[in-house]
Length: 414
Image (cartoon, rainbow, N blue to C red; front, side, top):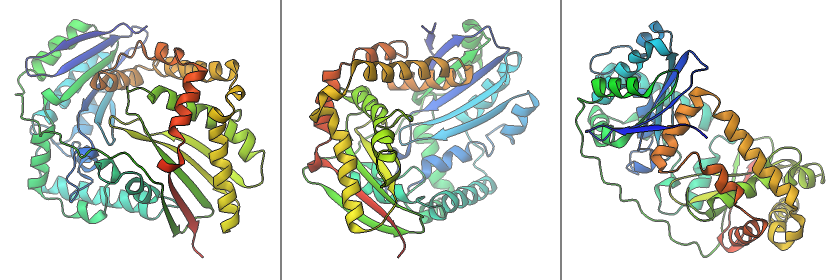
């Protein structure tokens, strides 16, 4: 059980805190309720670009990294379809430096043309390196619009096209900032060797004067219920054929979400998993096989993927069938799911959660995420423990419906 403290400033900034006396350090995380799902479809990649721009200088601080490093700290950030998170780690005695820096860039960026040029070039090079010039790097550019027809999740976080990032203007940057970056659209999370009174005092001092802003209304297109399978075949500079199958699943916190997470763990977590034992080791078709969920705030997708040894049509068809059949065993052969297998999966989740939260850095990040999602981090393990084998069977039968399956075949160039 994590001991938590919460507060809300008059400007809407939510604060969550957990003290850890074991360390001499502290982690400060600021998460904004904005991600790539909030982008204009004609100007994608903004959320990720903005993650970079936030390090390009704020209204009163030219060099964010230098100021933090002088205080003995480090920092990083990440962007998802739903959120943008910034976090700092530094000695607890210098915690005010993090509050000063994070509040200044929440107040306003410098909106420097030089910073925009630099970060625009950085992000376009990242786009090329990780998505255009890397084997399977553009896989999600094919997969996401195959699974989603109207919801903005159909665009990868990096952006739909590199030209979108190249044409971002300073006016676009200012509009994005003042529409999304505000105390009333953020959570401040602090974990480490600092007491709650100090956190509230510093938050009032540095973040309190920042005014509320009008947040751009979120009116996202809702994905219609899928009634027929979709399929796409592409070629690229890849060493093996990859098969990817996606199925619509519940959003985070909704009925069926936890069951889907457990299902993918049963199928593909570690060398004792069903995919590894029965597909990778148990056949000569697969070099690897995996299962995962996207874990998004809006309805997401459960993904089955595998790489196979041969690109012939017959081999692909046989491998596809084996991949689906192995997943379907969870409801077609419910007796195959033993109490021990289910308990092992849930124990693994609890262990991963528990050990992950022993890190004050990860604790600060996860507290911020859970707070923004409106979820209780202390009850999540109990939720997983309440899942029964019959719950898994019912959810698997509902999810692995081939009329709602989307298939991407990624072949090597012929």
